[in-house]
Length: 383
Ligand SMILES: *Cc1c(COP(=O)(O)O)cnc(C)c1O
Image 1 (cartoon, rainbow, N blue to C red):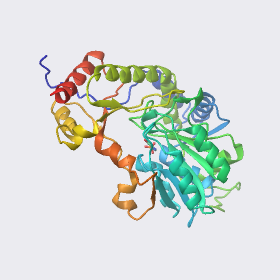
Image 2 (image 1 turned 60 degrees about the vertical axis):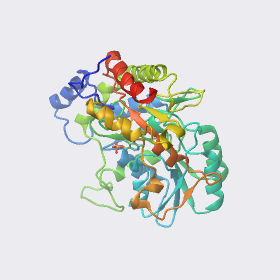
Image 3 (image 1 turned 135 degrees about the horizontal axis):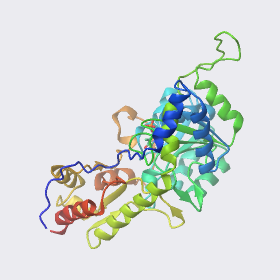
């Protein structure tokens, strides 16, 4: 089969809009609720909290802002340690530095690519008394080993923060990710499973905490007729226009999940017989497969026959976007010197980074286009 360069770029993940978003945005215009907050924000918070199954939510200008508020609520401050997922987007761990606390990076496990509970336990022992919080991510939508992680956090009395930015709608034993931590966040950035163009949300069952976060995120104004501030504030709230987009998108979340799952299954099927595997997940989970990823077998990569970079450059020629796996945080120049905890001297994150690649997972990608992408990858690996 001769495959030509795609005229339209095949995206990793791009926004998919329907028109219902505009109805909610129009409402905001009609009632002149343009500025921060308003009925769309209230409704969007309620709808997302109900969907995930937590008591309360605060909509923010970004997922990163929600994470910053989560760390503040956990009481993270200078001198504290936060144990965090090593293989993630830097947004998970950056706000720890905003508070001048210190990250300790916990290696991934092969079963889920997420934080290895065994490495977490080693770190909890090593830093006993100094750990304020544990921050976990559900990479590419695959839930982490939550039972084990929640149990360890309870045992050591540390606060769990869930970064569910990539896993909105994924479930673990029937329960939504973003509902296991004391404080949890989701993101509505442009490439996420649903988007508001940019935005996020902080979620918790603790109503007082959410009230506090709302106050911090609106410049921490005290209840006074003049502008009075007893605490440091931020401008982190979501606008009422943006929340309108979110309400429209939320109507299509389950549909997006089903499409992402179908995309993952097609790759899985299409790669049969090749020396590659897909991003893994636990049996009792239902991942949203935000991104489908492939992992090339060690011997193939080490022999130099086919590397993820070769696949990426080859697909780029056909106008197909792929992306390396997140580069682990302990390998980032900015975090040089931070501790990295793994099991038996292994370095799973580095290995996944060197052998993995994120594949086009756009919900608008047709089966025909995906089959051609699969064919291009097959041709490279079958030789
Ligand atoms: C996208 C993302 C975020 C933050 O999202 P923004 O809304 O862009 O600030 C945080 N963590 C992870 C793992 C993400 O993928």
